[in-house]
Image (cartoon, rainbow, N blue to C red):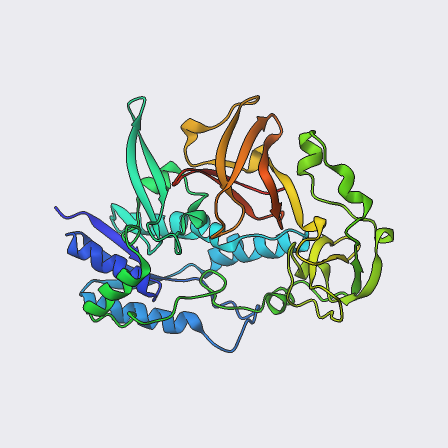
Amino acid sequence: MKRRVVVGLSGGVDSSVAALLLKEQGYEVIGMFMKNWHDDSVTISKECPWLDDSNDAMIVAQQLGIPFQAIDLSKEYKERIVDYMFAEYQAGRTPNPDVLCNREIKFDIFLKAALRLGADYVATGHYARKEETLVNDKKIYRLLAGKDANKDQSYFLCQLTQEQLEKALFPVGELRKPEVRALARKAGLTTANKKDSQGLCFVGKVHLPEFLQQRLAPRKGKAILIPDDAPVFANHSDDFEKITEPYHYEPTLGKVIGEHRGAHYFTIGQRKGLNLGGFPKPLFVIGTDTRENILYLGMGDDHPGLYRKGLFIPAQDEHWLRPDKKLNAGESVRYGVRIRYRQAQEGCTLYKREKGLYLIFDRPQKAITPGQFAVWYEEEELIGSGVIS
């Protein structure tokens, strides 16, 4: 009896080829499009990118000769992703909706819907790989980086569990992007030359300030330039809490150089959209105070306020995809760590304490951003992740 797989057909070339490969491998394949966005209370643009994507997904299913259906998950998407995003931005943190989308939508609600259809697996077009191994006679699933280093998307899957990974297939993970497009062209798929999607997961490309203004009202505030010799940078020591604590600034440390429309619209390391010019070097956001509505800026990408040697992940925000490798209080281990997608792994030591994890890097990291995910790897295997405090 054929094993049944429900493929999340997004209307892009990667998921199209994922379905193609699975069919060629002898699976019973069902294509399913997730409609996750039609909330008119948050207007993003006049376009409806999901409509075009849905049509493309349906055409691909017809070309492959597989059943197709759409599922409306917009209510769950709004509650689990969009509402969370607004709350995080209002608190001065920068969430990662793509990571959340995989954890909360694709490999939770969508997976459960697929299982109700009798599926053995769900498949996506992610550039990642999965392997099985035995640890103390127990089957463990390993999540590995995709073969295409330029497209590796394991970072976005960092919050998956062993139970979710068990049911997941990533057919294009062994391929490079040009190979995927070549397979699509050979099969005559309508998505073969379609550009990769950009922007918010399932929503499309957005201007973030405009998106946030639907819920977070603009509020004028002061933009303060902090000199690179401000005394706040003298707080580094061997003490973990001091090394990993985000920088805090006082308005008296710098000079008011203009206004902004709301501190909650900005993120650490941001350069574009400041609308402040006439300075010898580019300006970067080095701090936001959403309570007082103050934006702190530094001049030049070598400004000390952009760099930190470590970060902290509270215990409740730790996630170990490999639970057998979870650290106990007092233990430490060295891993390669990413604090953003496509970043090269950085040498780092993880120190476990009762409060959580302290990640101390071999060299200072640029724009460590609260709300984002730090992800740790053992060579090409993703071991765990956590929300940066």
